Amino acid sequence: MTADVTVTPPAVTPPRTRAARRGLRGTWTGLGMLALLFGGALLARLAGDAAAVDAGAVLRPPSADHWFGTDGTGRDVFVRTFAAGFADLPIALGGTLVALLTGTLLGLLASTRSRFAEPVMRLVDGFQAFPLLILILVIVQISGGGPAVLMCMIAILNVPRFIRLTRAEALQIRESRYVFFADVIGASRWHVLRRHVLPNVSGAVLGQASLGGALALGAIGAMSFLGLGIAPPTPSWGAMIQSGVAGITGGQWWPVMFPSLALVWAIAALNLIADDLDAHFAKEIQ
Image (cartoon, rainbow, N blue to C red):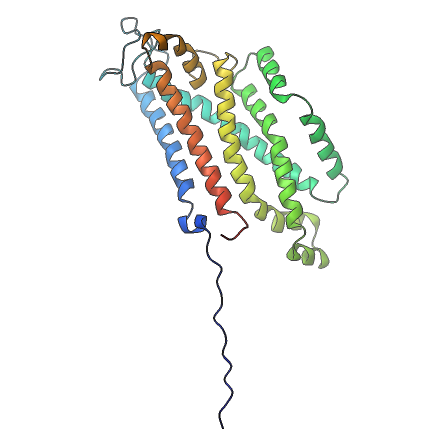
């Protein structure tokens, strides 16, 4: 007589996503690219004054004395290119951070069944009905620009996106069983939002924050190119590109090339972080 033997099948472990196997490698790469920009800015500050003018070295090509050459007034392009990172990046990232905090909070409120949910979304709809970019250009033109104004404008542009994204993600999470059971046992609304909803929307929100920072850098560069950004003599990538455009036809490519590469480098770094975070926190198992 033989005893019955119960064979337990091995547990099936879902395959790890590509982002999980990478271990956020793209995020660390993007952060390293930004760290190089800030490191170059510190080196540029030690190398010289961004506003210093050398009247005897106007539009000099790259050399051992001036690594990136000089511009039309004799200022060192290397120093100004990296110094511009200290002006553009904090404005873009600071405005995006304000939008992140404000939009996430309002998006979580809009995902609840409170009396504030519907007014918040109607306010967002009405706000987005205005041509925001034109409105922002008018405000910057009237106010004269400046870091504080630009940061506020970046925040205004990004807040509606964070509200809509956070609300959409939170509404999906509120349909899950663990949120249902938390409501059944009497957990407060704020406890559910803080303990269950917010941690699960953070991935999508952080990815949007990196993407928003990249878009903010492009917007700041465009406004500076149009003369509506950071006021001189503070260097800005967009203003440097605008001032050097006229010399391209004469063969003076360096005043435009190096600030353009720095701007593209920063935007690529933020996009790399955004793509990697989005893939890492994706709910679909690849």
